Image (tube, rainbow, N blue to C red; front, top):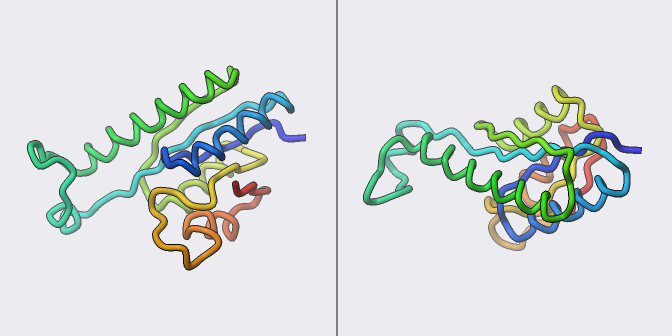
Length: 146
């Protein structure tokens, strides 16, 4: 069966459901779980057009990394509460779908469990969000979309 489950996590409601499914599968199969939160790198132009914290604008990438770390820590707590003990967690920057699939391949995950829509999703015009759709197309291992 599966021995290494990669669970990309963005903190959204649907990502929480996918995280619970990954925990359930890990407990059933004895697989280790790797959580991954990917934040998007912002250029200086994008940074000048974005507002993360009005009182402390600072470096946008640093603020995004800090926020991603909070998200991954929440994901670790959810997994621990579910009883998953064989767990690792990472924060990366980049294009989410490509970062997820490259990470999965590099770390030899044999299953990716992710949500159909996350924080970046907008509207109801597609069955899948753009990240989950791209991950399905790029992944070299099975992908379970919740």
